[in-house]
Amino acid sequence: MDRFNSSQAGSMLLQALPVRVGMDMATAAVWSAIAVLLTTVVVAAKTMMAKRSAAAAAKLPLPPVVSGVSLIIPVISRGPRAVVEELYGKLGSVFTVGFLGMKTTFLIGSESLDSFFTRPDAEVHQAKTYRNLTVPIFGKGVMYDVDVATRAEQFAASFEALRPTKLRSNAVAMVREAEEFFAKWGDQGTVDLKHELHLVILTTASRIILGKEVRETMLDDFASSFHELMNNGTHIVSLFFPNLPIPRHRRRDAASARVRGILARAIKLRRASGRVEDDMLQRYLETKYRDGRPMSDDEIIGLLTAMVVAGHKTMATNVTWTGAFLLANPNHLAAAVDEQRCLIARHGADRVVDYAALTEMDTLHCCIKEALRVYPPVPLLLRSVRKGFTVRTREGKEYEVPEGHTLVCYTALNNRLGHVYRDPGEYDPERFGPERNEDKVAGKFSFTSFGAGRHTCLGAAYAFLQMKAVWSHLLRNFELELISPFPELEVNNPTPGPRGKVMVSYKRRKLSS
Ligand code: HEM
Image (cartoon, rainbow, N blue to C red; front, top):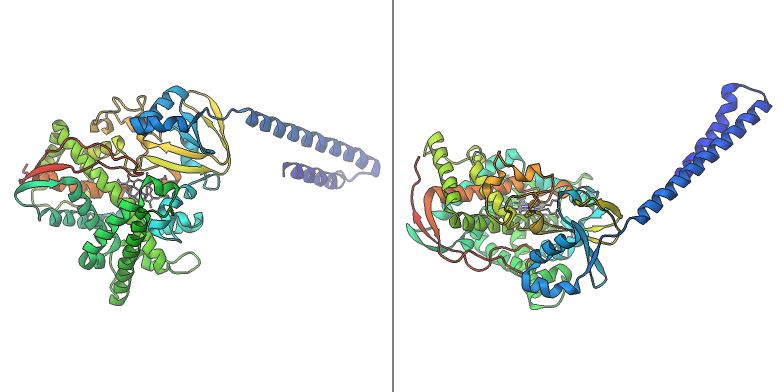
């Protein structure tokens, strides 16, 4: 292309020169010769430069490689994070794991992650790696099963329903749902907090995302089918072999059919009622693609499922970890309770907690964010390389990452780097306070629990509001105590949460200023 442009420029020069100087044939011949010479020199120089830069690129080494087979036993015995951390210590912030002919390159730390988060999909592709897991759950024709442009339109419709103006009304619904849900608890008792929090998050999502029809008439059916879908559809095996004929996948597919049936009924009811509601279902019903085509029912069902999946396990997991950490750390619990006391003193005990009040809860915000840092609900982000690129490591080395590699942003380690976070293994919400701001000062990809860049989470603001609505209600209305051991992390799950039950005892109280 460059060569073509240079020749073209040369011939244009040849055509233009005689006219400009208005000369005789001899002079024109001299100028023509000069032009040919110049063109030849330019073309030769460009070709040489192109060859040199290709040679330079070719000379860049590939990242150091380690055999995946040698990691199987360490991963099983010590867990993936410990193993990746050890490789990071030995090989630096960029390295490749080779396994069964696949090459997976880990990019650790803010300095190495730029290409992962900012390159266009044509070069660093997101969908391919997530398709296996999501198509059996969301169905075909949505999210990672469509081209980038269609997905962008589908996300734009979803984002419309998550805008700050919408979040104001969502916040009221979130607080109301929390009040109604916990009103069912007695004056004192013992509960599995994990189970309860999963339910309250799902109940609220069913109101704000799926709408009144599901919330009021089909919630139990939806909750049990959705639970079955998530339990069976998100195993690590499904990420690699989504259609393996195993009982787990048969249960997943049956649950998926039930969820689809429920959502199809909700759409029908909404259409028949002629009502216009303030929820995500309404948003999709009113959406038209750029070419004027409305969304099909199948697409709406797929997107509604996708939004509940994207938000439910992630938020439910994180509110549970937040609870476990607060109940295991009395000083941070006391700080979060004090903040609620101050807000009650400032606004009065009777003022309903609304969007403005939730956004004032900075201490609680940091407690939630710190749980997201320590145990990110999505610990592993994936991409595939379609066009090779150069990466510069924190240690100052340069590598070529070639086409065909899978890329990993391993948030579980990225969020715990010692040069970014002080005592990274400690639960310390104050690290996000204005004095320390540890994630901000260390580079823009230091905290990747919501991803970053091109595909950053669309629901982060929604998620913080929802999680604060739940915890501000609990802090104001209950004294809680963790009575089971501090939970361990689930294994073999791409979105791991706390393993087993998280038992707490509660006693009702009315917090005052
Ligand atoms: C604590 C809660 C949440 C966490 C930890 C979380 C985490 C993430 C992460 C890590 C990504 C980036 C994936 C990648 O780069 O490959 C992401 C993307 C996304 N999230 Fe969330 N999420 C949460 C809540 C939500 C909620 C409540 C919604 C919607 C209701 C949502 C909708 C989305 C969507 C649509 C994307 C895709 C964005 C894109 O690819 O352009 N998330 N989320």
